[in-house]
Length: 94
Picture 1 (tube, rainbow, N blue to C red):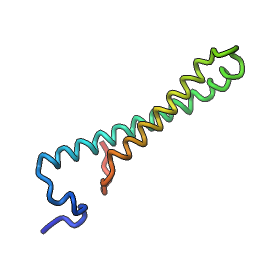
Picture 2: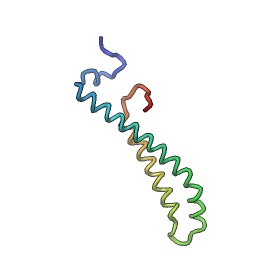
Picture 3: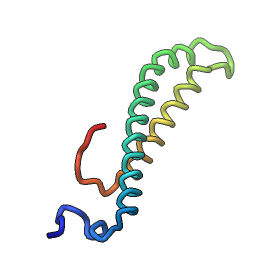
Picture 4: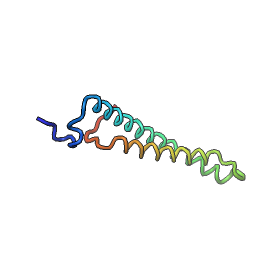
């Protein structure tokens, strides 16, 4: 009896294709975790970035640049992870 919880296109996969699909979804889960971690760091760095932006002269704002970088990496990792995990209909924790 077929597993009806699977999408129709996943019901006819070979074992090698199933392994590749699982590997893609695990990589997506890893990127989601990295996205959340970068987000936490960006949130904490925001406190120092505001002070750096206010008091540093000219273009010398290293904490502000680092905050933008970690925020951008957070967004990219999170969105990419969600795209790689598409089609996953179960929750599991590593």
